[in-house]
Length: 410
Ligand SMILES: Cc1cc2nc3c(=O)[nH]c(=O)nc-3n(C[C@H](O)[C@H](O)[C@H](O)COP(=O)(O)OP(=O)(O)OC[C@H]3O[C@@H](n4cnc5c(N)ncnc54)[C@H](O)[C@@H]3O)c2cc1C
Image (cartoon, rainbow, N blue to C red):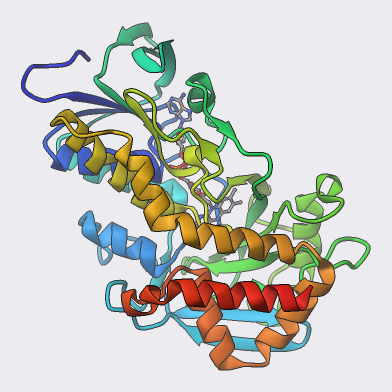
């Protein structure tokens, strides 16, 4: 790959949601795009396989065929804490649909990469990229696969290599240690009720000493005879480093609600886990000719651990700014847009996840919250980032109110 006089060339590193979305939108913007993915589709990814209405919206915009695939539609969320239970449907919204979905990442990611290909992107699987750097610019990229190594010289590079982001670290990007961070683990189980149209969350997961943990356990039904069962935690509590998420998943899956009819001793697959870099904790987001997207930029939402949608969104934004930089604009405007779009939201989310690191606050919020349907409806909207544009205009007041509630619970 060399730059051509007609269309600037872009190399996308990684074919998960962030890379595939960037490639899709870059190709649609008329740029010459080459995506490299080190594994081969269908590839496993530790994930809950849950898509919120925001993620569905991004997929619809990319022309994803929701009818033609083995995808399970989700109407809403059922939450538990202690003996309390509440069921909420996804809210009505002027932009996002009122439904979500579940789909195995092993199937989803390759399908979205195919959409990018249909727009003209070249997708090369089984190929690993490593940067060659000079003065904050990526002057070349070494691509290695079974046939050997070669060096390419793209005009721009989108770094979408996920939470470990070796390529990102190679260009000097680092995670802020003072920002929260998540860990999660999941396994698939067989269940006769896998066509349940509600995803489920357990808000009072505990460690072995019985302390309430900041995080939640989930059951995301897949509609195909299996359910995705997992547990995720944020790093904001004392003793975080000693917690073993697999033990928490084990304890949680042993006590799943009866309606799943799960034999907890035999998950269908071995549990696998991963990191959740959140709150846009990785930076700098932009170099002379490169940008970070998705988990490589720490884009996961700290409120709920959702990262697929934010990978799609940041990939799309990055594509717009690369197209604009190719026409003489500033690539650094990408970082400005990230701050404009997510800055306030993440600031409040950080306060929130720090506060729930205190087991007493966590317990109070879950027990108080689940007693009130209107409060939970509003909480679902905030946590899944589904405030309507009209409501978002008031976001500053809303966020200040959350800060007050959280501080009052301390
Ligand atoms: C247990 C768990 C459960 C989760 N559940 C959910 C959920 O239900 N819903 C949700 O929205 N989010 C969930 N998340 C978060 C979500 O999985 C991530 O935020 C999302 O995958 C980020 O997408 P990405 O494209 O940035 O990175 P990834 O999906 O990690 O994709 C990165 C890709 O880059 C490739 N790659 C890496 N290095 C190179 C290289 N040098 N060269 C070429 N290719 C490379 C990798 O093989 C990979 O395919 C969960 C995370 C975990 C760990």
